[in-house]
Length: 501
Ligand code: HEM
Ligand SMILES: *[C@@H]1O[C@H](CO)[C@@H](O)[C@H](O)[C@H]1NC(C)=O
Ligand SMILES: *[C@@H]1O[C@H](CO)[C@@H](O)[C@H](O)[C@H]1NC(C)=O
Ligand SMILES: *[C@@H]1O[C@H](CO)[C@@H](O)[C@H](O)[C@H]1NC(C)=O
Image (tube, rainbow, N blue to C red; front, side, top):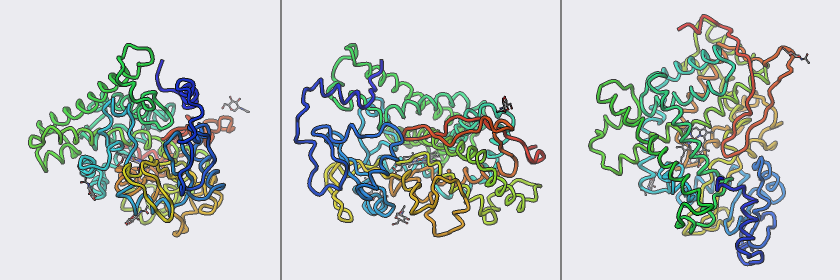
């Protein structure tokens, strides 16, 4: 049906198809490559690539071979980094040569290659990131504080009203929040037509980019020249359909925003800021495409990651009532239960910060970030490590967050550990590195913090049954962005007066 094949199936069928089981040359390790598990000729380590909990396998290899491990999949080198210092040296200090991305055919065919996560470090990439900064920069996010507060309150009210469908409530809330920042939509009615569209676009983006899904055309690029009616060519129809969805998500919310700006109706958003500083009419065709992609990246860039981290926070509260109680007591001591917490309270709420850091560590949505690529035209030598051109650079952040040498009892959810100011702050590495660092970082730092503080002030989050018969489990889905498995919880209001607005 689909031409997205499970990796191992693809490997086997490729071998049969090409009949080259013994092409010894390409499987060998170039001299100087960091150590790693021995592989097979031609295939390299393809059959050892984990299909589940990849970061745990990477950690195991790290214990066996050292902080930096190289594996090969066919002729592609993967460099797996299990050390904070090496990650910073490779991806931060040497960022001018390590900020490339892998090229995927389905991404190109469907048009997602002009999205920031897929752009190579070019002028277009710089422009695109500059646009997103106009809406998501540190200063903009500070100006946006009152709106963060209003939106956090909106979420707790929704969860108190409708605890049956936690994921949907959080997902819609996340989507509406990004739409507001990108396009200035005001309320659900104004924006809801785009929520489904955004989710659809994100599902497609994920399918086109997921490193664990290998499309036949990625391995056999010449297939793209075959006509789409041939058997096995359904990827071409898929790519055409995806292109249409992408065209809609790039254009419809954008034109909606422009209409509102022209009518003088929009609140501050990316499009209105650009309109003020350059005037939209002065943008040429190409700049307009870049702007539309930047807005779309804001809109769908944080859907899954943000839904994941917020859902993981509520999960942590269900499972760790002691942390919840301590957080509530801290917030109450500052607000006297007579008002909601604000960003001005932040210096007096250190435990809320501890909870935020611990949630990020315990439940990182992106356990191996989003792989960088070493400059395809030159090899590098960093801290004595040979990095072949075009290598995929994978930071095992999930493994670092579970390293007992850094975090004692790493599987334990224990916010108190962050009273130690010398402990590595998970937020300093969870969003990636240098020129490719997540453009949503300031947004997350604000929105997540106020969501945690507002929740502690207003709700009691409890297991779904008194006798704990349906206690949720601390388990997450697999994939480049992991979400907690769906769970039920009760959201009891503890300060009803604070929810009346
Ligand atoms: C908890 C929430 C989030 C986490 C953990 C997260 C994590 C990441 C990571 C690890 C990367 C790759 C960095 C690298 O390659 O070094 C990334 C990139 C990106 N993120 Fe986020 N992110 C989150 C939320 C958001 C939000 C809210 C937005 C936008 C509103 C966003 C937009 C992006 C974009 C556009 C990129 C691509 C940057 C590039 O390739 O240059 N993310 N994110
Ligand atoms: C990356 O380098 C910059 C400046 O050189 C530094 O401020 C920042 O902390 C570094 N980030 C990481 C994660 O090492
Ligand atoms: C993009 O910006 C960086 C600085 O942030 C600069 O070093 C680089 O040369 C720019 N790249 C292009 C292609 O303009
Ligand atoms: C726990 O309570 C639920 C209802 O709240 C009930 O259906 C279930 O049978 C109870 N389980 C046990 C083990 O008592």
